Length: 70
Figure 1 (cartoon, rainbow, N blue to C red):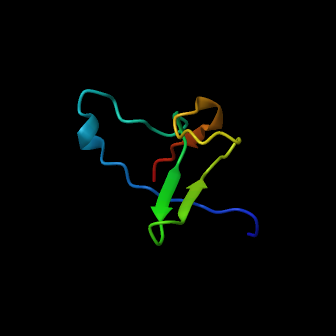
Figure 2 (figure 1 turned 90 degrees about the horizontal axis):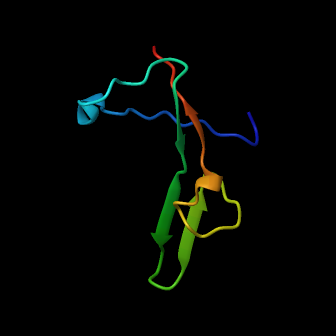
């Protein structure tokens, strides 16, 4: 569809051995950021949810990530 994108991510649960892996209907809050310097002068920032803040740790910009088991 137009005006949307989908992202499929594989999270290796073995790195969270102390915790129960999330299952269907569980959710975490995430904010994905990409920072790229193209020619050592031009900086490019892309963010999943941008609320005007330049900080990647701004919790107001985080969105729910819902888990689905397949």
